[in-house]
Length: 109
Length: 118
Image (cartoon, rainbow over all chains, first blue to last red; front, side, top):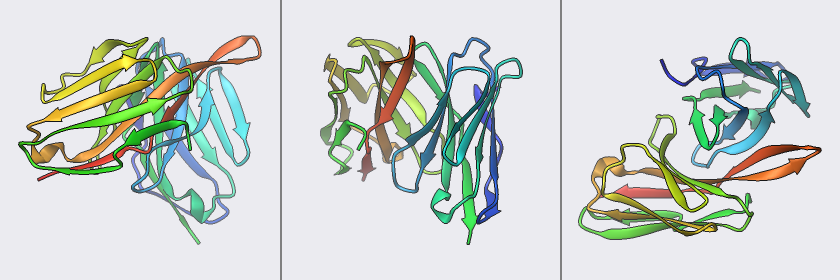
């Protein structure tokens, strides 16, 4: 079983819609959870971090964490063409980061 | 800019060459990482240094040799690489930042070195 799994893409959404990204992880003792955005040819950019169960909102992004279900999600509201990128879920336990394979999102104008 | 720098940004080398990648951060972070990202593949963790001590080596071939002389610098020495080693090599660092009464981890990637082995 992969340590971090993300829903397979690519995900295509119309401009202004909500993009929903899902991630599950296998290590129950994981402590910190992150979403990164990676544009083509660029390095990953941290966009959200979440540590406690529940929702965390930052602008158009909302991260949701459910440790009992070992599930993390990212919602992108009012999607813009500039949101088109690959989104990576990362789970940290102690010093180690495990990344999912990423979900590529395309926002159609 | 994340505060993590990598040099060179692009590198072309032959299979018999020896080169080094450099990563630098002055963020006070205490852990540094090397990742490899090949086309259409997920990030692969190569090495982790925590407080200048190597804590993980993910079955990386010996033609990759990391070095962490101090908490701000990380190197990846390359020798006799193969064409399949062509990839984007990313450095990342993690530190501790106080948020209210709780410690939270922050982490940043450098811009990466695009490596092509001929």
